[in-house]
Length: 227
Image (cartoon, rainbow, N blue to C red):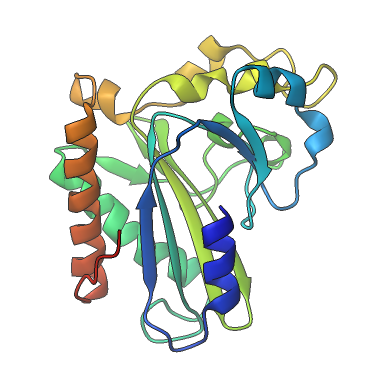
């Protein structure tokens, strides 16, 4: 997250887009830019060996564990990502949808959620506008921050079941207290579940390469890979 914050701070309008793909070690709970730490049980999180950090982007809390995480910095307003949050989401979604289609899935893009659902602390409890699901269950959660003619968008593509532990890290009395992991499982899905197999470490690497290629194709840009 620190690297993404630095990218956003240093990115200038007209710079080439920067795409980062990464995974989490150790796992971590991140909260949105406008959320408060007071709703989360820091002691329980740290006892599990996990971190609790705030993202530079908005959105709601995620337990980052079994997932592919992407972040992209770009210019908007501009010709590549359009002139609004809506247009930039649509362009990025082209790459995400293409990636999922290459895996043989049939992704759907959400039209939005109710005002009540927007009050939730938990990102994967509901699908906001532009977020992506499969068979009616949320698979990709994304959030964006815009400043000074540039933007940073984060997203999590779930690959396994570990994200379901997030309700265990909420403090009593906070919104969504009492929500069970089983309830969250009914609202979400992941690549392992949809493909009918556990995603191996080598499989994750192949998926990262595939995802990068999808962004390259959609944005019509050559990849300049940095480790």
